[in-house]
Image 1 (cartoon, rainbow, N blue to C red):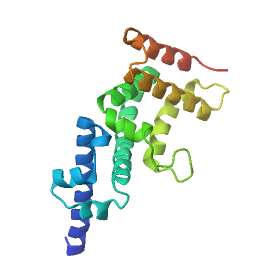
Image 2 (image 1 turned 120 degrees about the horizontal axis):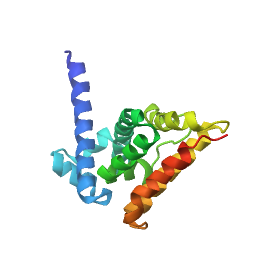
Image 3 (image 1 turned 90 degrees about the vertical axis):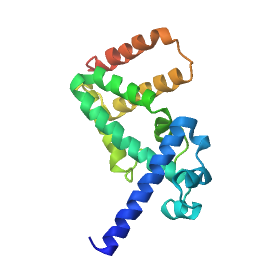
Length: 188
């Protein structure tokens, strides 16, 4: 390994360590608790080192965490696809419940990440593609793209309202079954 390769590897590892520490702190205390000062102390780097990796500071670190989350969610959804629409619904909800701070970074908190545009990162497109893969077979004559957006919106809305204690916990499974039944019914 050349000295240059070693420096690139070390820099990549430092960046990954920063993001991992931010994710861990966010899951424990929420994103408001994640500051560059706290992160620097936690991983024993100076704040300038953090800013050299993430010039945008906390927002850039949160975006990097979100991109990792998109990769993780895409893998979870791909694995769940064998269970059909119900499997994907369950996997999506379980991911959001297991990693609430990461889910917030991905979908709820303000972000500069470009959604639904030509410059959307591939890892984000992969998430949508996994949802599209279970909606396309039941879309019938409807355009599967907008139908998938509505499906995703329904899942996100249920996750968000449930996490905010806005919905009856007694009806959680019934709500998810309704999503599967409504979107699983072949459209004409």
